[in-house]
Picture 1 (cartoon, rainbow, N blue to C red):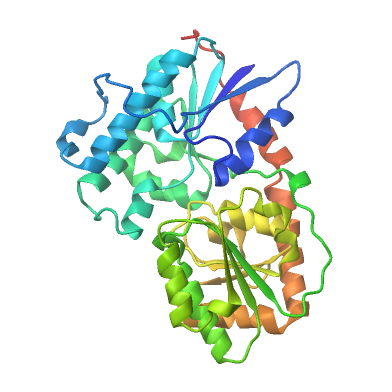
Picture 2 (cartoon, rainbow, N blue to C red):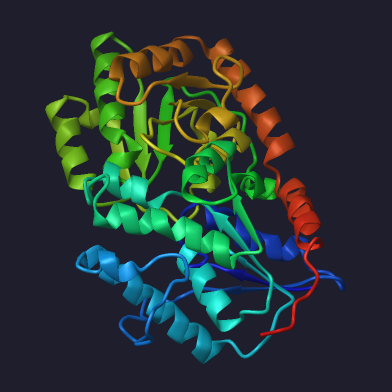
Length: 378
């Protein structure tokens, strides 16, 4: 079977999709399978001019929004790039972004399309203060779920929680499939180490939706309680300057290291002790699985797909979002009790190896792909 994995961002972009899709090629390399990757280069801007018509809703009713206009233009650009560069035909296309899926179906209308939804762009925009709940942009973005259902042969998500989130916006929620992201076990190797001072780490984009402000407040509380620690923040984003100022104001700047963007954090993640990310929304939370495969103790929030990875008190600890005292309490448990920390980390590693290995996910995807006979190639 000749497959195309249609991405939006380049494969080196940090995030759940890039943690999985490029590594799938190796698992599909055989006489029976062939797989290509396709994405929109960052340099492609304002090239497309095609009229955009969706079959399930009229996007122009939201067209006065600049964010909607930008989204539509990006879709036009993806269409333009696809038509310019895609001469090969495929038996099946698996898309990992709404724009990619809509464009691919437009260019290859007779090729079966599987669309995986990895995150809720509208939810993140709301939490980041970029759009208003119920506003034009929100209405436009949730309308896309129905359009994607209409053009896809199969609609999929990465967690049961996200499937439930999408359900109100489509016609037949019972047809949504769930396959979590998978991770190449060879990239994550636990390393025995003994840190005199507990090392906390988070890997994330620095935006309000990720709750790093709550983490800094919790760490200030830990310091007030007399606990020693170092907090490593790996990632960049528009909130970085504000977060650095907050760390200074809270008196924890000396305990906090801001690394900025790092391409392969998994290479040194195993040397830390505790992974913590108090997200306000998370469709799956790939970085929790990555931290678990690095054998770190996990502390997260009970939102989205995170509770599907973390069973509170068994393989990690869960707290409510925006609750810095509860987060400080959870961190205190794993900081002050190394044996308990090891027990949690080992359980997290066992679960991640079992459920989120790339081998297992690749086998699930192969079963899914084989359900769709080759269409008339577009």
